[in-house]
Length: 150
Image 1 (cartoon, one colour):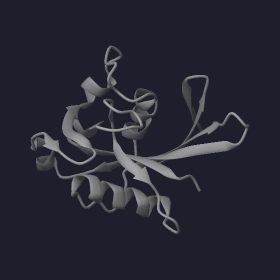
Image 2 (cartoon, helix red, strand yellow; image 1 turned 90 degrees about the vertical axis):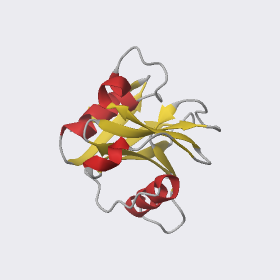
Image 3 (cartoon, one colour; image 1 turned 120 degrees about the vertical axis):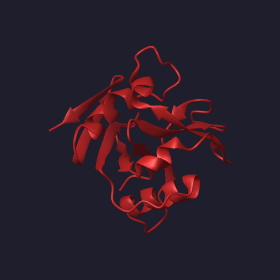
Image 4 (cartoon, helix red, strand yellow; image 1 turned 45 degrees about the vertical axis):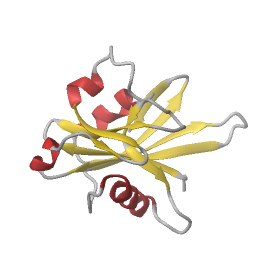
């Protein structure tokens, strides 16, 4: 089991993004998330992190992925990625400042725009797969590219 998760909350054509105030990836837009606690499943950790960082109670993910990569000492590491869908009215909320940073609803087109340099690395490579259809996915990160493994 890997230690970390990143979660995207979707409402209509918007996704809740966090601009982090502290490392890692300070000043970059990404999903919410964090570290899974000892004895906690990846799914339970994602649900807890979403609630802690946003106040939203989510139950079941729409789609989920695992991104793996080789570390410098040739060990396998990874990250769990989740997409949750919430009620359409929630996506109209305004910007919110939290202890983690700024939460804001961003249009999917804005997130995926290739000219947008403010999005966390890899997001524009795996998020389209998670948005495409429900399911569980496996990705491998190598040489700056995330490959969807069938």
